[in-house]
Length: 193
Image (cartoon, rainbow, N blue to C red):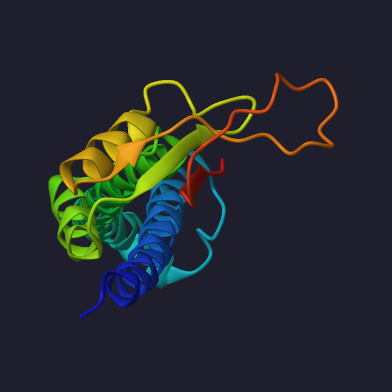
């Protein structure tokens, strides 16, 4: 049975046992009141049954009601314990799931890096193209702290036989350093954040 259905069933059972417990308390009150009335007052003395049996009936009701109250209290406490255990277990599961989600989120937000499989795949796919000149740049602001992505890409390109050349600035660039001259076409690898 799914945990939610089990929890709902236990709550329903507990409500029933609590109602029985309230009825038992009411019966205890009636038994005590009956004994008190029989022993300390003259009420209902005109009725022969009450005069002969009222105290005994009230005492018997009191004993049965106390026994019922004991049973219903034990059962209600047992069900409460099951509910608490179920809710505690569910809370622990949810806390574990939340911790995993926090870790997953930290990975997404954390520094970007390549795993060894990705590095090998880059090298394998670039090697057949032969040696090529390339420029590797990182936009202003750079990568997030702890990221070694630019170095991993540079290392992968060099391992594939490519070689780095300085970037050639556009002639119309304002506030840029002087244009670098590169012989022949070269590849620009941009790493955008």
